[in-house]
Image 1 (tube, rainbow, N blue to C red):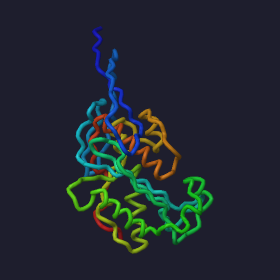
Image 2 (image 1 turned 180 degrees about the horizontal axis):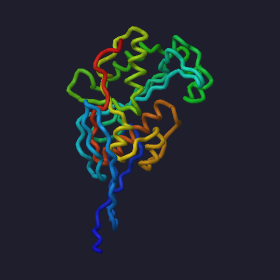
Image 3 (image 1 turned 90 degrees about the vertical axis):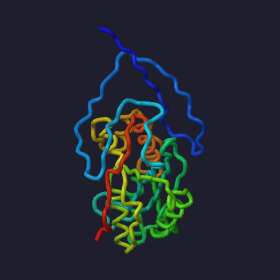
Image 4 (image 1 turned 180 degrees about the vertical axis):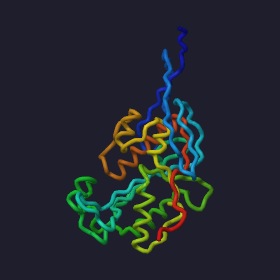
Length: 263
């Protein structure tokens, strides 16, 4: 049997410092046999079209967005009962360049809960957030305003720059943020109404729907950074997954949206 040699590009997918430099040099190797990845049939939501992942390439395929904003909230919670309403206590956003696929800037705030100001023991154990970290912090409304100010400073609002929020699951922007805005009588900013669920992008690329963030990192052979259920650390890990999927030629499109303010 004739063996066809194909190049395998080894790309470094770990996080780099915020002040990214030139791309690392890439060494081309050869392997004897190419393998095929089977993609399971996944029905895409009506609003979005997604492209199946293909073998790694460099440079990665051009994305449709100038920036990706990775977001992962942490909220008040308890082990055996549902806290109503839940309140965001950690509000991180990691800005990733659409071409560089590197982290370029970060926004991070802890938020003081007001309806249920005391964190449960379970919440602290899960998130690593202790009471003193949220006491005397800005309220949710103030942090929402600070996030918008940061986005303006980064040139994301009031310009031609196109960006897309990236989440791990749909809960953050489909349930948590609009729910808290509704509870407080605040308008939901339009730019939070579209996002890509990284789990769906992973499933379309790899062929299996992931259970959680850890399973995606394992499936892509990426090292976990930081602490599980730290909002900021989760954002960094999601950014690493985003980068790896982009290198595999996945083109990110919105997978979720909110058409109207929830009533």
